[in-house]
Image (tube, rainbow, N blue to C red):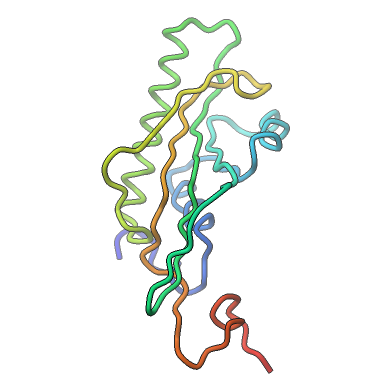
Length: 167
């Protein structure tokens, strides 16, 4: 396994926890919220930062031996920009945020926590989306876990889903 992520398999981790671990390994200030709560928290949150927007959809992939969660994710890389910033200044902030998004995708692909993200990754640029003057990029993708919940014959549903033994 590449990187320092080998110990993550020692306990069951949610997709969000894996994403958080990768982003924090890059030195990112990380927030996992919806847009409205993030709008309140961002006033006191260190910038630049990354907002992992609470997923609104996804899929569960069920195979013969594993069950994997595949949430549709939106991750916003943002930084402060002055209220009276010029277009060039805003563009510079957006390009820096885009570079951070690229570094995240490459780190995710090297981690072996997920199958590599390939092909086109949709992004959108935002300005003044929150009450604080920030600019950035938001990427949209669906990570595919390499290792999900192991399904073993003889285990109960509670053991498989929650890791709890009955009795």
